[in-house]
Amino acid sequence: MIHSHWRFSLPARHLRRLAEERKIAWLFWEDTFTFDERTIHGLDNIAAELERYVATLRPYPRVLLVPDHVVRLVLRLVRGALRRALRIAWPSLNR
Image (tube, rainbow, N blue to C red):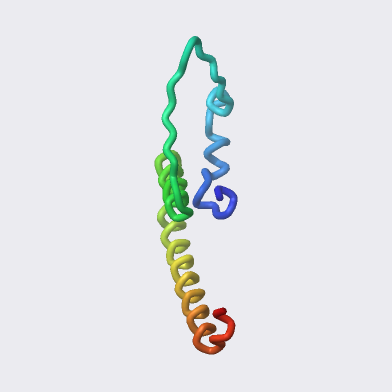
């Protein structure tokens, strides 16, 4: 999903600005270590979590996010209207 839209991943400039030691992670532990992992169900919830994560590390400017949100909303409304129009025009396709 992170490759499906730019808002789900960090900008390339984020990686370029990281110090070398932050670009590579090593895991060394003795005896045990602890971690916490949340399970996220549903594409909408996954999308929201990815957007939240990106926004906490390196948020995109609102000048990019707001127009993108408007375009996606308009496209979703147009697709819905077209689906309804097709169902009404050709009821036999709904089977």
